Length: 426
Ligand code: AMP
Ligand code: GLY
Image (cartoon, rainbow, N blue to C red; front, side, top):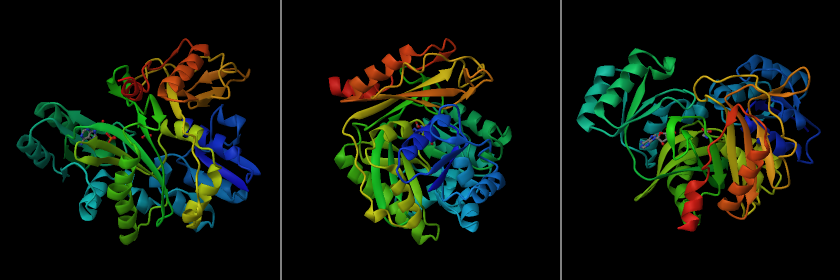
C-alpha cells in the first residue's frame, strides 16, 4: 500500500522508520519530512498546515493511508478532510482532537466523566481569574486554553507570578487567541509520567509508559522545551499503575468521548501526575509524544502499520503488539540557544559512525544543503536513541553515540533518564 506520513520532527522520523520496515508498504511519502526521513521515505514539500495541499497530494498520488504526526493539522480537521475525500487515515477528527485543542473542554469533560484531575476554574474574564487566584493562593497553575506549542502553562510559585501570567495571556495575548480563555488549576504534587494507548473509538490497546524531560537544563532547570529526552518504560508506571491508569483515566475517556458523539480514534497520550492518591490527569495530547515516540518505536517488536490501520478500521481488538523488555532512551540534541533564539544552518558531521544495532539517530530539524552536507535547520535537531537492558545501559549507549557526533553548535542534557537510573541504584 501507499502511505503518507504528515510531519517533519523526530516523532515523524521514528514513525517513518517503523512504517518503512513493514512488508505492507509499497511506497512511503512524508510531508514535509527532513534529511533523516529522506532515508526512509520520499519527502514532499507540503507544510503540515496546508490541508488543501495534503488532501490534493493524497488524492493525486492514490495514497491508501495517511498517518498524521502533529496536533496542529489534527485540531484543524485534516482527518475530517481526508474522510470526506474517501482516504483512510490515522488520527482523531477535529471534534475528538479537542482533548488537546482545548484545555477547558478537557477539564469539563473530566468533571462530567469522573476522571481524576486537578481542581480548576475556567475564565474569559481576567478580573474573575485574578479573584480566583487570590482566593486559592499559591502555588497555582495558569494555562492558556488553546494550542501554544507546549508553552502556554505557567506553574506559579507566588500569587504575583500567577497574576502576571493572567496579564500576559489575557491582556497581552502572549499566546494569541489561545489565551482568550484560561484555566487556573490546583498545583499537584507527585512524579510525572506519560502513558500511551491506541484506540479505535471503542477498544483500547495500552502501549507503554514513558518519561519526558521538559526543562532545557540538567537537573530539570531552565525554561520549558518541547522535550529534551525521554525513555520507556518508566519505572513509576509499573503493571499495577498501568492498570489503574487504564481503568481510572483512559477507559472512561474513550467511553465518554463515544457517548458524547465524538469518538476518539488514534493514539491517546495522557500526561499524568502520579500522586499519593494515584494517577491524575495533567493534560491529554492526541498524538504521539516527541521524543517519547522515538523511544517507543525502538521498543516495538511488532509491525506498527497493521495496528495503525486497525485503529482506522475499528479492528483494534484483533491486534496484539509485542515489545522488547529493554529500555529505550532518547537524548535530544538541540541548537545552542534553544528554546530561545538559535543559529540555523550549522553543519553536523559524524552521524554515519553513530547509528548501530542498538542506536538510531532520528532527525528533527535537519536538511541537506546543495553539496549534500547535513545542516541543522530547527531548534530540536537530533534524537539519539539507544536500547539497553536497563536505563543505565541505554543511557550509556546513547551518550556514547552523542559523543561521536561532530556538531560544535549543538548541545544536549547530560542527565536524561536520571529518575530511572537513580531509582534502580537506590
Ligand atoms: P502541560 O503543558 O499541561 O503538560 O504542562 C506543562 C508542565 O507544567 C507539566 O509537564 C507539569 O510539569 C506542569 N504542570 C501542569 N499542570 C500542573 C498541575 N496542575 N500541577 C503541577 N504541575 C503542573
Ligand atoms: N514530549 C511532549 C510532547 O510531545 O508533547
